[in-house]
Image (cartoon, rainbow over all chains, first blue to last red; front, side):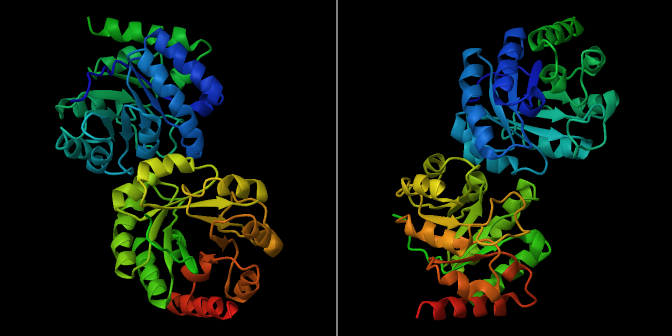
Length: 215
Length: 215
């Protein structure tokens, strides 16, 4: 059985945005202190050795905070670093293959950007644990992303699946409350924390917005 | 125990150079018919789903020819596709980690470009099965490659390790005999086969050159 997980404030840690390995670790620590409930490592520009070197430090850090740590795309890095799982996209290894390689206890998330992908992903319930839906807004972070789905698209995706769904794509402090109106299980942010002057404060503020929006 | 392997004519299959998935399969088949003794898949521009889709067709094809099939960099793709092993570079997952993930029977190759890397790699004998030494010549194929080591550099690397060493980097029909004078265990080629008008003939011709140079 997979351990319980909380998608409320999902940090996608981009070490290049943070300023490198050491800065990324500091951002992760600050975000966890501020209330991040899940950490994903995503470093598309990096070679795998650098992913591994950072992932094996993030895994115990997240664990010490009682928060799952997943690796974007690279199942091998997740296995090597003792991560809790992976987050995969539509062009990564198929989810059933990732599940086979990682075993029944791993946490596996899958990105969807439209209702067709959501229907396919929903059929993988039991293999996939949660969905990442987006991009909600256009974002410069992910240059190969699909067209933005908007708040209405997010709400439609959320309503079309049994799987808990975290919203991603262009989410910042100023639009977090708006995104929460679509009632996702949480918000995934990249630059809103990675590029924040004070990542701990940025995480705490987002966590407060998310909590308020549920009342 | 690892099965025996023969580095003589080592095809690095670049599916983009070949012209896509189907063309790459056809090139691999032709090269195996022509005498390729090992096949590596390397598709740096591709998403991992595409690697996997091709790798799972290459694995049984190579096996049917009695030839090992390895995946560049991605241990997870190798595991998912049932490949015989991986070829890793200096910036990929560490060799000992790859060995742990793949198990004792996998074939693991490691790229080296100078004597320092060779000494480190030689100390990994038992974990690493062979070395890829180069680039011998400058090559447009791998834009992030180290400076060329030349024939003398290749000979020095070969002499500095117990591990069998395959030469790579800019090797073509016209310089294959020259490279073999440094007595590597074999030649790794990319465009010399992937871009050949007749990949079977190109492989057969290279195989003949390699065999002759050993007399």
